[in-house]
Amino acid sequence: MKTFRTLLLLSAIFFFSTSQTFGQDKLDAEIVSDLSATKQYAFGVSQELHFRGVLGMYDRLVDSGVEVTDYEIVVKGKVVKQLVKGSELETLFQKYKGKVRVSVCSVAMEKLGVTEGQLAEGMEPVVTYSVRLLQLQAKGYSTLFY
Image 1 (cartoon, rainbow, N blue to C red):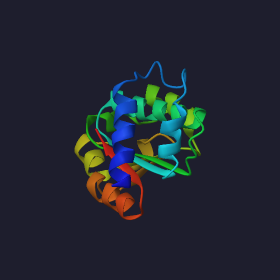
Image 2 (cartoon, rainbow, N blue to C red; image 1 turned 135 degrees about the vertical axis):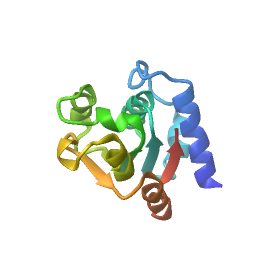
Image 3 (cartoon, rainbow, N blue to C red; image 1 turned 180 degrees about the vertical axis):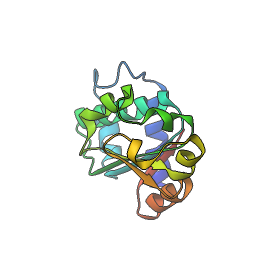
Image 4 (cartoon, one colour; image 1 turned 90 degrees about the vertical axis):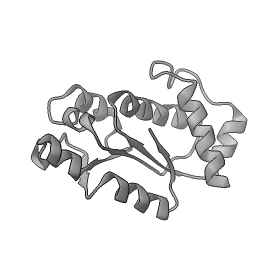
């Protein structure tokens, strides 16, 4: 039930905010208190918009005083092609290196012709999107899928 409540709150935060408003206004004390029940977050994304939004959510959580010890984005789909060296998303991610882990589905990489050597620094291949998210859930992460 605790995980469901956390996921519901995170969904509401993402839904009612745009990537442009993240970091501009803080969460209210009740939300921060509720979110203090967990410190580990994982997000499954398959679109650039969601990747950007989840990075923005990290800022908003931290700026609001939510303690985050582990924050991971697991990526699949065509957006994988945008996580390569020299890309706009690589530039965006620079700010989050060492704070946010990005795991990239190796199946998607193979289908899209992206090699490990092409991935931007800080992007790590994983066996599959689904298996990595199941692994994070088993470790107690609050997870959300887009």
